[in-house]
Image 1 (cartoon, helix red, strand yellow):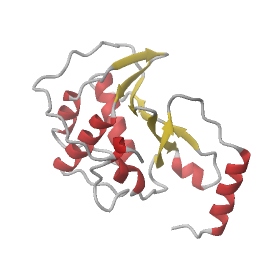
Image 2 (cartoon, one colour):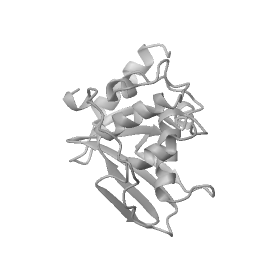
Image 3 (cartoon, one colour):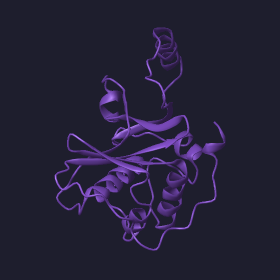
Image 4 (cartoon, one colour):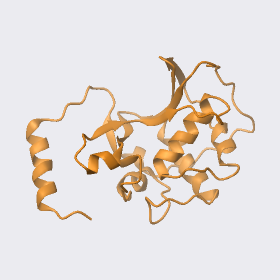
Length: 193
């Protein structure tokens, strides 16, 4: 992994919430974490994959809940739930995450708001989660780097998002039949953990 996966020095948080675009009719929201040529993705509906379902890579985000105050609330709640398999965010964490803002862009398409942030912000998220005492059954020790986030994840059939991956962002990705065959061979020859 390149230098962008190391633990950069996190930026200071701003003292006020940045101006937030309004999308009153949104139905869901998420955050796409992109750095240079790669994007963070995860295997969606992991429990279904384990019983023979198709493994589908996706980003982080989901549906609006009645208690969400706006799309940024939805986006951060979903990101933390999916990264760490938690149902409740520690008091104060959401407010600090909101200070990171919606990133460079917030795009509204078909009811879904997608914000774009970089790995510097994602690293800051990891630090904030640890500072707020968040724990996760997916990690022995809460990750503080992108490398730890991806490589030290212990997947659970109870988690919505399974393994995480860094994918190329500039090109449409198709997996070759030969590589899929290699993965099947590997899975059948290595006992599950």
